Image (cartoon, rainbow, N blue to C red):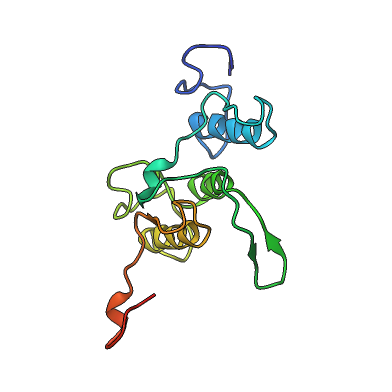
Length: 153
């Protein structure tokens, strides 16, 4: 599409084909531009997604990196925006929708149900502290009832 057009971020068109819709492709382009700092160290590309709505409490920080060691020993040091772009493009639907935590949709495929995938994303967001040190992502599961005595942490 025409990246200079005023309606570039929302326009659909035949020239963009594939499994992802036009808007998602433009968001992926914006993510790549931001990740490569093409608009400067703190600049943002047109069509970049504001993921702050993913936080139930706390303040979303898309640039935050909380390094995590995977089961195979490799270090995953992706930013919160990178994680959100991956999940929202590949498996969890529209994270900004008001019914996000309970909605089921055809766009979410795989063995896990839609709601479980969203809980997995919430766990990842909380683990990576994308909503701040004590903030919580929406759709997070409250496991406090697991404790007969004491306080769940």
